Each structure stands twice: as structure tokens, then as C-alpha cells.
Image (cartoon, rainbow, N blue to C red; front, side, top):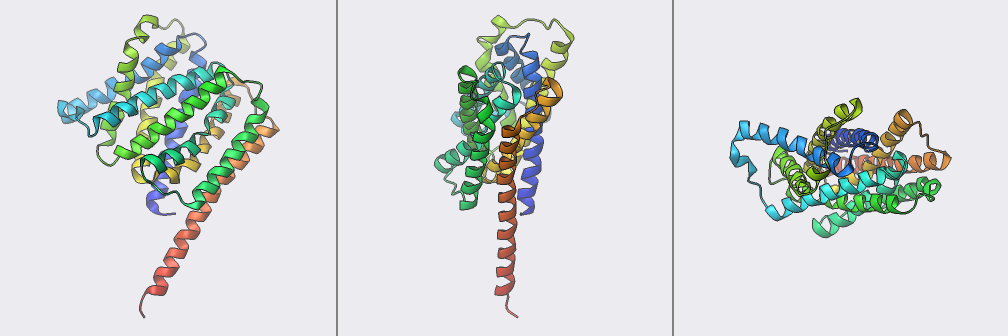
Length: 299
């Protein structure tokens, strides 16, 4: 694996860890706090923090970004994805909601092929197929949880996959912090029409502690993802998104005392195998390329 791809994976793993932490916290606070208002705060906090930092360091010209239409689409797809997934969290266990949403990496490859003109390697398609089989195995015990939860999780995966591909499309044309600001600001503006009518002051310790951190986890998580997708292709990173399922399982056990059964564990092992397959094939390809370069060198 090339050093740039390794760096992209480090950013990716940091981002998905932050997202899994945010989801576990969101499921907890959604038991008592209005969902729409919580999502609004999740985007409002990073909008104010990142916007303030950029004003101080770059002045008000920082707000200019290329391709405003794509920037608006990024913000809308992101906030709709969050609304859908947090709806799923209110109807499904954390692990099962995450499992359903992990059809997303397959969608990333499809969207990247159509919107970015990328040509995924055969290795990527095989790995994604293996990962999708793992999702189906892990989902089998949760088939009784059909309805709005499963639909919301699937919708979240579709919108978030589209957001990632749109981010890749503009990642090389603007600073990562500017892209982060626009995604959060558009989401906050879109919810400002509705959220203030249902928002209220926190009424217990958990709400006071969790609500501000939802925005912080989301802000740093998306910054890490923007960095990752500015380095590597969407189709290269897609199989490794499955690692978030393991982190969600850990939080499901730690916070909600919800351990996965045998089918879920088997599915996660298959999902991990897909990522390891890509990593191994990448190393073999790099080794072959080095061997060919040495063989072509004149003596």
C-alpha cells in the first residue's frame, strides 16, 4: 500500500471512530430530547466554531467556495442522512442500525463510477461483494425490526454515500476547513426553519453534557473524512468503512449492554475479511509494480 493511501486510512479510521461515538451519544440523548432539535445543534455548533476560526484567520472571504451548487447538495445530503440515521437509532438497536446502513460502501462505489468517472478495480468490487454478504449475515437476526427503522437506515446510507462522493468531487478545489464549514452551515440553515420551534433548554445532566459534544464529534469526524477523501479514491476507501460496524458493536455493548449474537459476529468477520482482502491485494500490486520497475531498469 502506498504511503498516501496509508495516510488516507488513518484519517478514515479517526473519522469513523468519531462518528460511531457521536451515534452512540445521539441514541442516548434522543430518548429525552427532540430529534430535529438535536440534529440542528449538531450542525449549529461546528458552524459557529469553524466559521469563527475562519473569520479570524482568513477574513470573510473564506466563505467563497467553488461550485456552489455542489456545496449546497453536500450540505443537504449530509443533514438528511443524519436525520434518517438518528431516526433509525430511535427504532433499532445501535448495532442493527449500523449494520443496515453498511450497504453504503457499495453505494459509494456505484456513485463514484457515475459521478466521478472513477474506474474501480476488480479487487474493489470483489471486496465490496464480500462485505455486502457480511452485512446480510449480520442483519439476519434483525429482520424482525422492519419498518421505519430499516427504511431510515437505508435512506441514510444512500444520502451519506452521495455526500462522500460529492465531497471527493470538490475536495481538491478548496481548503478542508472551508468544505467542512459549508457542509455544516447549509445543514444548520436548512433546519433553522423547523428546529427552533421544537428546541428547548436541556433539563438533565446527560443532555447538558451530550448535546454540545454531538457537534464536536461530527465536526472533527467530517474534517477527518474530508482529509481522507482528498488523498485517496472513494472506491479505494469504501471497503474500510465497515470498520465502523465493529466500533458501533463495542458501544452497543458498553453503553446499552447489547451484545451481538453468532450471526452478527460472523457477519462482522466477513466484513473484516473484505477490508483485509483489499489491503493484501494492494500490497501485492505494489510489490509487482516495484518488481517490474526493477526489471525494466537497464544494467
